[in-house]
Length: 366
Image 1 (spheres, rainbow, N blue to C red):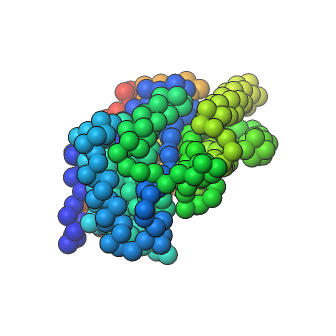
Image 2 (image 1 turned 90 degrees about the horizontal axis):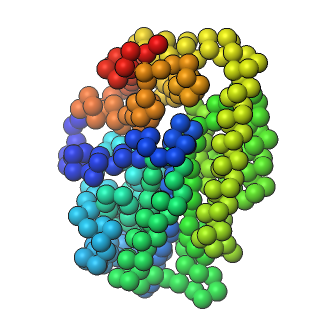
C-alpha cells in the first residue's frame, strides 16, 4: 500500500482492538457487542467544530499529559488519526474503534488536526471528535453492566485530572444538545434475521422508538442496515440518569432477544425445510464464490449465522463469523493485500478471504 504517511502497526493495538469479537459475552449468538460511550468536553476550550487547529492540539496535549493519573489508560496506545492514511483510518473505523467523523471519512467533513484516539486494554478515548472527548468501552455480547463499569471508571479517573465542562442544571455540556445531561450513549449491535424473515421487524422497531430507543446500521448514525444487523441505542440523554438509561436498554433489548428467539422457533416450525435450504445455500455461496460485494457477504453471513444459531450448521464458531463480519471489509482487505484495491479487486479479495477462513476454521462443517 503506497502512502507517504506512516502505516498503522496493528500489532501495537491491545488485542488488536478486537477482543469484543470473541463471542464470550452473554447472548453472543444474537448480540455481537455492547458499547458504552460518554461525551465530555474540556472546560476553557471552544467545542471541536469551532476550535482552531492550535486549540485542538493544546487540548490533546493537556489530555495526554494527564494520563499518568488515569489507570484505565495505563500503557494505552496513542494513535494520531491526522497522521494516518485514509485506508488506515478506515480500518480503525471498521474495527469500531473510532467513529466515521473522527476518522474523517466523510468528504464533507475531512480529518481534523488533532484527531486522535487512546486505545487501552478495555477502553478507548476519542479526542477531537464532535465533542472534545468520547470515552468508550466495547464488550462482547449483551454486557451492559460490564461495559458501563469500565467507562464509568475511566470517567472518574479522567475527570479528576481534566476539568469537564459542566452545568448544574443541564449536566455535562456537549456540542449537540441531545447528548447533554449524562452524555451517555448506550448501544448494542444485534442480529435479527428471525424477525426480518417473519416480517415482524417493523413492529419491533416501531416499539423501540416509542420506548425512547433508536436503531441504525452496522456503524451507527448515517449507516445503512445490512445483513440484518441493527445497532440499538438511546435517543437522548438529557433528563434521565445513567442508571435509568441502562435499565431502559437492558429491558428493551432483552425483550427484543426474546422476540427474535420466538421468531426463529416459528421459522423452524412452519418453514423448516425452506429455511434450511436457504441457509445452506448462503453457506455454499460463501464457501465457493469467487467474487463478493460487501452487501452480498453481509447478507450471506447473516444466513450462516442464523444457521449456526439454529444448529443446522455445526463446527463453525460464532467467533469465526464475527471475525468475517469485520475482516472482510474493504480496508482490512487492502491491508491484507498491502496495496490499494479497486472495487472489483476488493470483491475478489473478499471472496478469497472468506473461502480461506471457512476452510481453515470451519472445523468440518456438517
